[in-house]
Length: 87
Image (cartoon, rainbow, N blue to C red; front, side):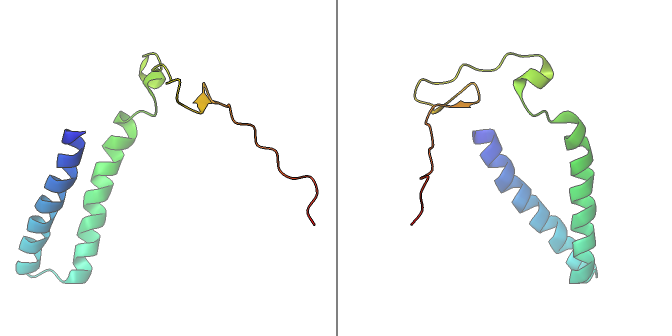
């Protein structure tokens, strides 16, 4: 969790510095939107191929669910019954 939190803070600080340098170099604020799109797209492509949806996708077993969890193995334990008559 600490690494994930740190990545958001460092990423924000680094991109502010990079975009500030680009503004001082003469780019317009409209051009910065294109720069952000290129940076985001360049991070999206490797993430699409390397990030997996679940442990099962990389050959690991799913973690055990907690007894306090209302969902157990994808089945809802609380039964929802809508009222049959609406007046």
